[in-house]
Image (cartoon, rainbow, N blue to C red; front, side, top):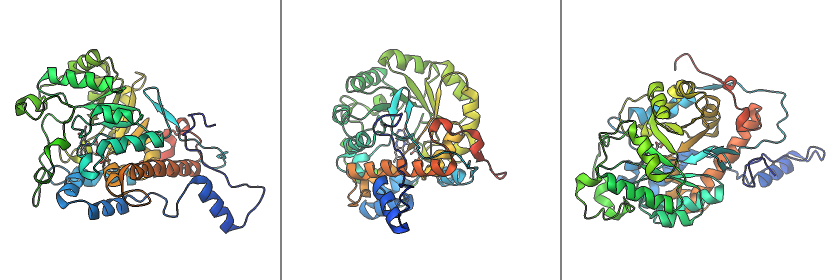
Amino acid sequence: MPAGGPQARIRPRVNATGFPGCREAAAEFASLAGLQQDRPVRMDDLQRAAALRLPAPVIEYFDQGAGDSVSTARAQAAWDRIALRPHTLRDVSRVSTATSVLGQQVAAPVLVAPTAMQRAAHPDGETATARAVAAAGSLMTVSTNAGRTFEEIGAAGAPWWLQVYVLRDRGLTAAMLQRARAAGASALVLTVDTPVVGRKYNAGPSVWDVVPGDFMLVNVPGQETLPAEAIDKADDLTPDIIGWLRECSGLPVVVKGVLRADDARTAVSAGASAVQVSNHGGRQLDLAVATADVLAEIVAAVEGSGAEVYVDGGIRRAEHVLAALALGARAVFLGRPVLWALAAGGASGQGGSDGVADLLTGFADDLAQVMTLAGVRSPAEIGADLVRRSSSS
Ligand code: FNR
């Protein structure tokens, strides 16, 4: 059994003593690995399939960035600029992607970021995602804006963290935290890059014109009748909020939306257990720096503190995951790919939990292969020497 538990992705081996013919070997490998012919996971195909299934304002909402979407467009390119320096002549007959985040075992360091409007991608929304996450041995962050209740999501049995937008009404915020904890949330993820929502441009009708109100914020008691000011996001947050969240919930706090070394140090000094390097998928301040370009300095800033560092934004291939871990991240989070998979993923193309499970297990399989090719057997063996940053970055 792999070190990380029963669900860890282990790269299967073709029986070397039998020297089967090429075709048989390929078939044996594919069936052992559970791989399909269309591996590796192709994100652009998934995105295109989702665009064919969803109303135009919904796919526009998922894919767009703030302003002119410059940060959104730059995100993946920044990962693609990183060059890998694989090891050779290493025994890679057993490779495991298993790791842990805040003490929670996961099958691979590829986790689910919080995103609003999952019910617009699939009627089961966050509940479908949670079922897939449980099946794949992953972990999910549930948005404050979720359209399914914490109790429904918790019942799926996946480990999950609550993403927190602190609302102007702190009493409502506290009630939401307690409800999440009772339903099984094991950490809070405080989003700090959203004192206001970044402006986005819509060519025609926006998502708000086509989806019902109960696709959002269903876990904030009485939200339909509350004045807008009560549920507006707080724009007066300071580092003290981290201690308040910990006290209120008894849960560890991850600070999401950090792009600077000094802010990372401040968050950790104020009691954060982890920071998530993120620019919100380019949906907040346009022209914000790409996460791939600041990850290493943030890792260096909190080194020795015991805090974990995660990253999201533009991660679309297993090679990006390898690069992120080499730059010091403990895990990566996927945003849009999960929405596309919910809408149109899976063998049937029907999305839902099959679509998301297929995305997560496909990523883990791809990561096992990429680690094998890079000469590393576990996430712990992925070191900074595996990457060379290009001089143009
Ligand atoms: C988001 N994101 C987000 N973040 C957050 O903290 N709370 C939220 O409710 C949402 N909602 C949301 C909706 C949609 C449609 C998207 C695309 C994104 C940001 C998300 O957690 C993550 O930071 C980025 O999506 C990561 O980038 P990629 O993987 O989408 O490139």
